[in-house]
Length: 315
Ligand SMILES: N[C@@H](CCC(=O)N[C@@H](CS)C(=O)NCC(=O)O)C(=O)O
Image 1 (cartoon, rainbow, N blue to C red):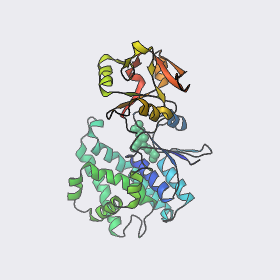
Image 2: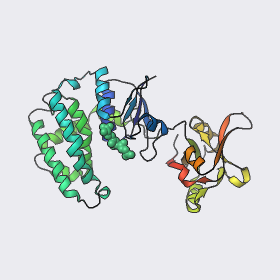
Image 3: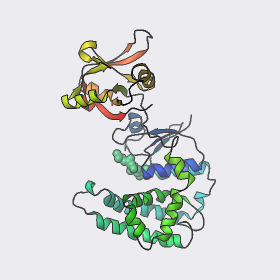
């Protein structure tokens, strides 16, 4: 059994963890999560609810991206990322994770910080980037002639700064060495690797603890207007059938094949059984008439707030 990695494709912390795991050649079971609906398995492993989280087969939990990077590189470090001077590495990462990230967030997401303006934070982040640029001008990498942990730990964050305003970043004077360093990262095989499957899934991992229901977009739209969802299965209402059909995660594909294979536009409702219970909606596992396979049945209308996530369904 490989370790389990809870990840979010675009999160820079998760990206740096995936970079180290990939360079170490460490296989993982990747569980892409939605930050809006974190699966109970993630929250049980790490109550703070951030990604990345790595769970080893012996139950050890690592809930900090740097701990995951270091663990991966201790297993295998083919490019010598751990060889740079530790104190300098620490200082650079602390500057990134502290002040740089602080200013980056306030520059990138001004709406999340009422009362703050973006421009001073952009300037403060740029002052840090200019110092890093000076280092890079003296060698190709932050700590000399070889790539090290500090480079890979910082690059996903610098990439975010650039993506927030690519034209502004391109026009900024005194950043030539830093731009070349970032361009190297952008074109690196390692980055491509960790932004694509199997290192980065585009679809969320399906928890065995949640329930799943495929819905026609028009039915879901109507539910949003009415305040609850009352369709049992395709073309049949809760009133007609007496319950709402649902699937466990491992049954979803077969359910799709049986009833919705000809529908191109579908929604997947991800249902939290705890929230159903809070609304007094009973769920019973009952056998399908032909196969005897047990499926979850919901006895009552599905309240909107028991739907923790709605996705476009793709197989
Ligand atoms: N110190 C943590 C920070 C991880 C972190 O903040 N990740 C963000 C995503 S980029 C997160 O999970 N946020 C929780 C949320 O948005 O609910 C680490 O290095 O792993």
